[in-house]
Image (cartoon, rainbow, N blue to C red):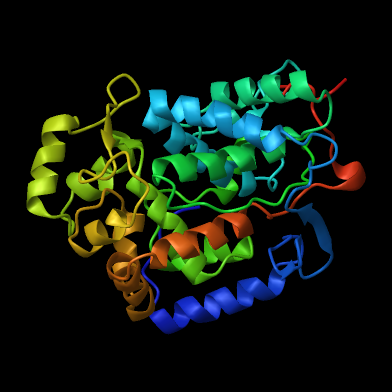
Length: 344
Protein backbone atom coordinates (compact mmCIF):
# COMPACT_ATOMS: atom_id res chain seq x y z
CA UNK A 1 0.00 0.00 0.00
CA UNK A 2 1.38 3.37 -0.95
CA UNK A 3 0.67 7.04 -0.58
CA UNK A 4 -2.04 9.09 -2.16
CA UNK A 5 -3.90 12.36 -1.99
CA UNK A 6 -6.35 13.10 0.77
CA UNK A 7 -9.95 12.23 0.05
CA UNK A 8 -12.75 14.67 0.67
CA UNK A 9 -15.10 13.56 3.49
CA UNK A 10 -17.83 12.59 1.02
CA UNK A 11 -15.37 10.51 -1.00
CA UNK A 12 -14.19 8.81 2.18
CA UNK A 13 -17.72 7.75 3.04
CA UNK A 14 -18.43 6.56 -0.51
CA UNK A 15 -15.23 4.53 -0.61
CA UNK A 16 -16.17 2.95 2.70
CA UNK A 17 -19.65 2.04 1.46
CA UNK A 18 -18.23 0.39 -1.65
CA UNK A 19 -15.68 -1.58 0.33
CA UNK A 20 -18.19 -2.66 2.94
CA UNK A 21 -20.31 -4.17 0.19
CA UNK A 22 -17.36 -6.41 -0.67
CA UNK A 23 -16.84 -7.70 2.86
CA UNK A 24 -17.96 -11.32 3.04
CA UNK A 25 -15.41 -13.17 5.15
CA UNK A 26 -15.35 -11.00 8.22
CA UNK A 27 -17.03 -12.51 11.24
CA UNK A 28 -18.26 -9.43 13.06
CA UNK A 29 -19.67 -8.76 16.47
CA UNK A 30 -23.41 -8.47 16.33
CA UNK A 31 -24.65 -9.72 19.66
CA UNK A 32 -27.47 -12.20 20.05
CA UNK A 33 -27.28 -13.14 23.68
CA UNK A 34 -23.71 -14.20 24.45
CA UNK A 35 -22.92 -15.06 20.80
CA UNK A 36 -21.15 -12.88 18.24
CA UNK A 37 -21.82 -13.57 14.61
CA UNK A 38 -21.09 -12.11 11.22
CA UNK A 39 -23.21 -11.12 8.25
CA UNK A 40 -22.74 -14.53 6.59
CA UNK A 41 -22.68 -17.03 9.45
CA UNK A 42 -22.14 -17.32 13.16
CA UNK A 43 -18.53 -17.16 14.39
CA UNK A 44 -19.37 -19.43 17.26
CA UNK A 45 -17.65 -17.01 19.63
CA UNK A 46 -19.14 -16.94 23.09
CA UNK A 47 -18.45 -15.20 26.39
CA UNK A 48 -17.43 -17.88 28.90
CA UNK A 49 -16.52 -20.33 26.13
CA UNK A 50 -14.12 -22.28 28.39
CA UNK A 51 -16.34 -22.23 31.48
CA UNK A 52 -16.89 -26.00 31.44
CA UNK A 53 -13.71 -27.36 29.85
CA UNK A 54 -11.13 -25.03 31.43
CA UNK A 55 -12.91 -22.89 34.01
CA UNK A 56 -9.83 -20.99 35.18
CA UNK A 57 -8.38 -20.27 31.72
CA UNK A 58 -9.20 -16.57 31.65
CA UNK A 59 -8.06 -16.03 35.24
CA UNK A 60 -4.76 -17.73 34.46
CA UNK A 61 -4.13 -15.51 31.43
CA UNK A 62 -5.07 -12.40 33.39
CA UNK A 63 -2.63 -13.30 36.16
CA UNK A 64 0.26 -13.73 33.71
CA UNK A 65 -0.59 -10.52 31.84
CA UNK A 66 -1.06 -8.51 35.02
CA UNK A 67 2.37 -9.52 36.33
CA UNK A 68 3.99 -8.70 32.98
CA UNK A 69 2.36 -5.26 32.72
CA UNK A 70 3.38 -4.47 36.29
CA UNK A 71 7.01 -5.22 35.38
CA UNK A 72 6.88 -3.34 32.06
CA UNK A 73 3.85 -1.30 30.93
CA UNK A 74 5.34 -1.23 27.43
CA UNK A 75 4.71 -4.93 27.02
CA UNK A 76 1.03 -4.27 27.73
CA UNK A 77 0.93 -1.85 24.82
CA UNK A 78 2.58 -4.56 22.75
CA UNK A 79 -0.15 -7.06 23.63
CA UNK A 80 -2.91 -4.66 22.57
CA UNK A 81 -1.06 -4.04 19.31
CA UNK A 82 -0.51 -7.78 18.85
CA UNK A 83 -4.26 -8.42 18.63
CA UNK A 84 -4.58 -5.76 15.93
CA UNK A 85 -1.60 -7.12 13.98
CA UNK A 86 -2.88 -10.69 14.28
CA UNK A 87 -6.48 -10.01 13.32
CA UNK A 88 -5.80 -7.78 10.31
CA UNK A 89 -3.62 -10.49 8.68
CA UNK A 90 -5.39 -13.84 8.08
CA UNK A 91 -7.94 -13.05 10.81
CA UNK A 92 -7.70 -13.58 14.58
CA UNK A 93 -5.89 -16.92 14.39
CA UNK A 94 -2.55 -16.44 16.17
CA UNK A 95 -0.71 -16.63 12.84
CA UNK A 96 1.45 -13.73 14.05
CA UNK A 97 2.98 -16.03 16.69
CA UNK A 98 4.44 -18.64 14.33
CA UNK A 99 8.24 -18.86 14.25
CA UNK A 100 10.20 -19.33 11.02
CA UNK A 101 10.84 -22.92 9.91
CA UNK A 102 12.65 -24.46 6.93
CA UNK A 103 9.22 -24.99 5.34
CA UNK A 104 8.09 -21.43 6.14
CA UNK A 105 11.15 -19.17 6.56
CA UNK A 106 9.22 -15.89 6.39
CA UNK A 107 6.17 -15.93 8.72
CA UNK A 108 4.22 -12.80 9.72
CA UNK A 109 6.38 -11.98 12.73
CA UNK A 110 9.27 -11.24 10.33
CA UNK A 111 7.21 -8.79 8.25
CA UNK A 112 8.34 -5.13 8.42
CA UNK A 113 5.31 -3.99 10.48
CA UNK A 114 6.15 -6.62 13.13
CA UNK A 115 9.93 -6.95 13.10
CA UNK A 116 11.53 -5.68 15.27
CA UNK A 117 8.75 -3.64 16.87
CA UNK A 118 6.06 -6.15 17.93
CA UNK A 119 6.36 -7.12 21.59
CA UNK A 120 4.79 -9.55 24.02
CA UNK A 121 5.50 -12.97 22.52
CA UNK A 122 7.08 -14.19 25.75
CA UNK A 123 3.93 -13.21 27.70
CA UNK A 124 1.78 -15.29 25.35
CA UNK A 125 4.22 -18.19 25.76
CA UNK A 126 3.97 -17.93 29.55
CA UNK A 127 0.18 -17.73 29.48
CA UNK A 128 -0.05 -20.70 27.12
CA UNK A 129 2.28 -22.78 29.33
CA UNK A 130 0.20 -21.99 32.41
CA UNK A 131 -3.08 -22.79 30.68
CA UNK A 132 -1.66 -26.02 29.22
CA UNK A 133 -0.61 -27.09 32.70
CA UNK A 134 -4.21 -26.69 33.85
CA UNK A 135 -6.06 -27.91 30.76
CA UNK A 136 -3.89 -29.53 28.08
CA UNK A 137 -5.01 -29.07 24.48
CA UNK A 138 -8.14 -27.03 25.25
CA UNK A 139 -7.40 -23.30 24.89
CA UNK A 140 -6.29 -21.88 21.55
CA UNK A 141 -3.41 -19.45 21.16
CA UNK A 142 -5.76 -17.15 19.23
CA UNK A 143 -8.03 -16.88 22.26
CA UNK A 144 -5.03 -16.29 24.53
CA UNK A 145 -3.96 -13.37 22.30
CA UNK A 146 -7.49 -11.93 22.54
CA UNK A 147 -7.66 -12.40 26.31
CA UNK A 148 -4.19 -10.88 26.74
CA UNK A 149 -5.15 -7.76 24.78
CA UNK A 150 -8.27 -7.39 26.89
CA UNK A 151 -6.33 -7.86 30.12
CA UNK A 152 -3.54 -5.50 29.09
CA UNK A 153 -6.21 -2.89 28.37
CA UNK A 154 -7.68 -3.46 31.83
CA UNK A 155 -4.38 -3.02 33.66
CA UNK A 156 -3.05 -0.13 31.55
CA UNK A 157 -6.33 1.77 32.02
CA UNK A 158 -6.27 1.24 35.79
CA UNK A 159 -9.42 -0.92 35.44
CA UNK A 160 -11.43 1.68 33.47
CA UNK A 161 -11.39 -0.45 30.30
CA UNK A 162 -13.02 -3.65 31.57
CA UNK A 163 -14.98 -5.90 29.23
CA UNK A 164 -15.76 -9.51 28.41
CA UNK A 165 -14.03 -11.12 25.45
CA UNK A 166 -15.92 -13.84 23.58
CA UNK A 167 -13.83 -16.91 22.76
CA UNK A 168 -13.89 -19.98 20.53
CA UNK A 169 -11.25 -19.09 17.93
CA UNK A 170 -9.01 -21.74 16.42
CA UNK A 171 -5.36 -21.29 15.49
CA UNK A 172 -4.41 -20.88 11.85
CA UNK A 173 -1.75 -22.86 10.01
CA UNK A 174 -0.71 -20.23 7.44
CA UNK A 175 1.57 -17.27 8.09
CA UNK A 176 3.36 -15.16 5.47
CA UNK A 177 5.40 -12.01 6.08
CA UNK A 178 4.35 -10.42 2.79
CA UNK A 179 0.72 -10.41 3.92
CA UNK A 180 1.55 -7.94 6.69
CA UNK A 181 2.28 -5.30 4.06
CA UNK A 182 -1.01 -6.09 2.31
CA UNK A 183 -3.22 -5.47 5.34
CA UNK A 184 -1.52 -3.54 8.14
CA UNK A 185 -1.82 0.24 7.66
CA UNK A 186 1.50 2.10 7.81
CA UNK A 187 1.82 5.29 9.89
CA UNK A 188 2.04 7.31 6.68
CA UNK A 189 -1.58 6.63 5.66
CA UNK A 190 -3.98 9.52 5.12
CA UNK A 191 -7.63 9.43 6.17
CA UNK A 192 -9.00 7.95 2.97
CA UNK A 193 -6.47 5.14 3.06
CA UNK A 194 -7.19 4.41 6.73
CA UNK A 195 -10.94 4.27 6.17
CA UNK A 196 -10.52 1.91 3.23
CA UNK A 197 -8.07 -0.29 5.15
CA UNK A 198 -10.43 -0.75 8.10
CA UNK A 199 -13.50 -1.13 5.89
CA UNK A 200 -11.99 -4.14 4.15
CA UNK A 201 -11.99 -5.82 7.57
CA UNK A 202 -15.58 -4.80 8.29
CA UNK A 203 -14.68 -2.00 10.68
CA UNK A 204 -16.34 1.42 10.54
CA UNK A 205 -14.86 4.90 10.44
CA UNK A 206 -15.65 5.27 14.14
CA UNK A 207 -13.99 1.91 14.90
CA UNK A 208 -10.87 3.21 13.18
CA UNK A 209 -10.86 6.46 15.16
CA UNK A 210 -11.54 4.65 18.44
CA UNK A 211 -8.90 1.95 17.91
CA UNK A 212 -6.34 4.62 17.01
CA UNK A 213 -6.66 5.67 20.65
CA UNK A 214 -4.39 2.74 21.56
CA UNK A 215 -1.56 5.04 20.44
CA UNK A 216 -1.87 6.58 23.90
CA UNK A 217 0.47 3.85 25.19
CA UNK A 218 3.66 2.29 23.96
CA UNK A 219 6.57 3.57 21.93
CA UNK A 220 7.51 4.05 18.31
CA UNK A 221 10.73 3.75 16.35
CA UNK A 222 11.92 7.09 14.99
CA UNK A 223 11.85 5.68 11.45
CA UNK A 224 8.05 5.49 11.67
CA UNK A 225 7.62 9.27 11.70
CA UNK A 226 10.86 11.15 11.03
CA UNK A 227 10.73 11.00 7.19
CA UNK A 228 7.20 12.41 6.82
CA UNK A 229 6.77 14.41 10.04
CA UNK A 230 10.17 15.83 11.05
CA UNK A 231 12.26 15.80 7.90
CA UNK A 232 9.62 17.79 5.99
CA UNK A 233 7.17 20.52 7.04
CA UNK A 234 4.19 19.17 8.97
CA UNK A 235 1.52 20.34 11.40
CA UNK A 236 3.40 18.90 14.40
CA UNK A 237 3.50 21.28 17.36
CA UNK A 238 6.95 22.98 17.32
CA UNK A 239 7.91 22.14 20.91
CA UNK A 240 7.20 18.42 20.39
CA UNK A 241 9.05 18.48 17.07
CA UNK A 242 12.07 20.11 18.69
CA UNK A 243 12.07 17.55 21.53
CA UNK A 244 11.84 14.64 19.08
CA UNK A 245 14.75 16.00 17.07
CA UNK A 246 16.89 15.64 20.20
CA UNK A 247 15.84 11.99 20.52
CA UNK A 248 15.82 10.83 16.88
CA UNK A 249 18.53 10.87 14.21
CA UNK A 250 17.80 13.00 11.16
CA UNK A 251 17.96 9.86 9.03
CA UNK A 252 17.07 6.77 11.06
CA UNK A 253 18.59 3.50 9.89
CA UNK A 254 18.39 -0.13 10.96
CA UNK A 255 21.51 0.42 13.07
CA UNK A 256 20.35 3.75 14.53
CA UNK A 257 16.61 3.77 15.14
CA UNK A 258 15.75 4.66 18.76
CA UNK A 259 12.25 4.52 20.22
CA UNK A 260 10.25 7.35 21.78
CA UNK A 261 6.98 7.29 23.72
CA UNK A 262 3.85 7.91 21.66
CA UNK A 263 2.08 9.96 24.33
CA UNK A 264 4.38 12.34 26.21
CA UNK A 265 1.68 13.23 28.76
CA UNK A 266 0.54 9.82 30.08
CA UNK A 267 2.86 7.36 28.29
CA UNK A 268 1.92 4.30 30.36
CA UNK A 269 -1.83 4.88 30.76
CA UNK A 270 -4.52 3.68 28.38
CA UNK A 271 -6.72 6.77 28.45
CA UNK A 272 -8.20 9.44 26.18
CA UNK A 273 -5.11 11.66 26.29
CA UNK A 274 -4.32 10.61 22.70
CA UNK A 275 -7.28 12.62 21.42
CA UNK A 276 -6.23 15.69 23.36
CA UNK A 277 -2.81 15.26 21.78
CA UNK A 278 -4.36 15.00 18.30
CA UNK A 279 -6.21 18.27 18.87
CA UNK A 280 -2.99 19.91 20.07
CA UNK A 281 -1.01 18.53 17.08
CA UNK A 282 1.18 16.62 19.53
CA UNK A 283 1.09 13.21 17.81
CA UNK A 284 3.78 11.28 16.00
CA UNK A 285 2.17 9.85 12.89
CA UNK A 286 0.63 11.18 9.70
CA UNK A 287 -2.16 8.67 10.37
CA UNK A 288 -2.79 10.30 13.76
CA UNK A 289 -2.90 13.84 12.36
CA UNK A 290 -5.19 12.59 9.57
CA UNK A 291 -8.09 12.23 12.02
CA UNK A 292 -8.56 16.02 11.87
CA UNK A 293 -8.82 16.15 8.08
CA UNK A 294 -12.58 15.57 7.84
CA UNK A 295 -15.38 17.19 9.90
CA UNK A 296 -16.83 13.79 10.82
CA UNK A 297 -13.65 12.28 12.21
CA UNK A 298 -12.60 15.59 13.81
CA UNK A 299 -15.88 15.59 15.76
CA UNK A 300 -15.16 12.05 16.94
CA UNK A 301 -11.77 13.20 18.16
CA UNK A 302 -13.35 16.10 20.07
CA UNK A 303 -15.96 13.82 21.67
CA UNK A 304 -13.36 11.23 22.66
CA UNK A 305 -11.17 13.96 24.14
CA UNK A 306 -13.84 15.81 26.09
CA UNK A 307 -16.68 13.50 27.18
CA UNK A 308 -15.75 11.41 30.26
CA UNK A 309 -15.99 7.68 29.59
CA UNK A 310 -16.97 8.18 25.93
CA UNK A 311 -13.79 6.74 24.43
CA UNK A 312 -13.45 3.90 26.94
CA UNK A 313 -16.96 2.62 26.20
CA UNK A 314 -16.36 2.67 22.47
CA UNK A 315 -12.91 1.13 22.76
CA UNK A 316 -14.33 -1.87 24.60
CA UNK A 317 -16.87 -2.52 21.82
CA UNK A 318 -14.33 -1.92 19.05
CA UNK A 319 -11.86 -4.37 20.59
CA UNK A 320 -14.49 -7.12 20.70
CA UNK A 321 -15.49 -6.34 17.13
CA UNK A 322 -11.90 -6.39 15.90
CA UNK A 323 -11.27 -9.66 17.73
CA UNK A 324 -13.98 -11.35 15.64
CA UNK A 325 -12.38 -10.69 12.24
CA UNK A 326 -12.16 -13.78 10.02
CA UNK A 327 -12.20 -16.26 12.88
CA UNK A 328 -11.13 -19.82 12.12
CA UNK A 329 -13.63 -22.52 13.07
CA UNK A 330 -14.24 -26.19 12.30
CA UNK A 331 -11.66 -27.72 9.97
CA UNK A 332 -10.08 -24.34 9.20
CA UNK A 333 -7.89 -24.35 12.30
CA UNK A 334 -6.50 -26.24 15.25
CA UNK A 335 -5.53 -25.77 18.89
CA UNK A 336 -1.75 -25.52 18.85
CA UNK A 337 0.23 -27.27 21.54
CA UNK A 338 2.97 -24.65 21.11
CA UNK A 339 1.91 -21.18 20.00
CA UNK A 340 5.10 -20.80 17.93
CA UNK A 341 4.55 -23.89 15.74
CA UNK A 342 1.72 -25.67 13.96
CA UNK A 343 0.82 -29.12 15.21
CA UNK A 344 2.39 -32.11 13.47
